Length: 301
Image (cartoon, rainbow, N blue to C red):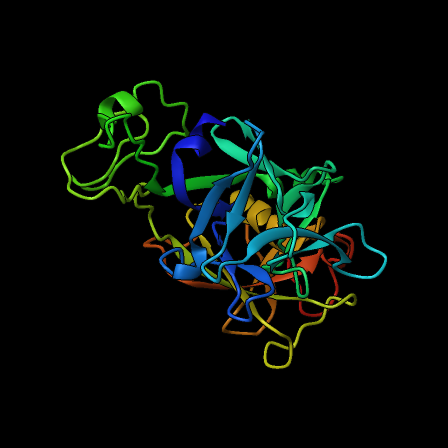
């Protein structure tokens, strides 16, 4: 909790490598890869009388809120919104807890802020819930980037020595990427003039873009008619890609296939992915439509 005591503004990055954004409608929240947007910035407010509870305020001056509205009828997940209630109650209060090098944000009623993956309408949505499936356990974990820090005032009215302020920093493991950045990991400031200090995560390899379609229950897919999706992938192995696609779609038993340019048949990927991070187009097929029926038209094993 010391970490948020020192933070003035943060951004939250989900397990899907997307940031928590306040939507332009000033009501909903979602996930997006653009972490540079002002909508990804959340102001940290400490709840008076508590050392463990915070509020997060969006760029529209509204609070991240755990509502009682179901995201989908019959589902346990409930909507997370940005609201400005007349009286600040427990729906806008979150308890950060550390999980290794990441954070979980828990509501006062035991649910967790969850970044959903999968197909629409789940894709890029944010709910509060308790994950029950192993494949979605990581969806409640968030990387926290500090965008601005609090500068404490001394009794004389001047800012305290920043090296002393952060000397016992209990923070996540962030590295600075420029001379003007604050190294939260080391707890030391570099020379700078402003109290608004940007802390950025290390630059990541962009990887390759994976474009994919999902075959229907009969194993058929029309590339032109079926809605397509995409994700960024930084690995090279087929097993790793398959796991990433399972997490992104919420599907369990799938085979990742490519379509031959020669005969238009689908071939399951077996070896390493093409080199040089070249973009790929793949099709996800239920295992039962491939392994169980080698003679099925359109599939070769």
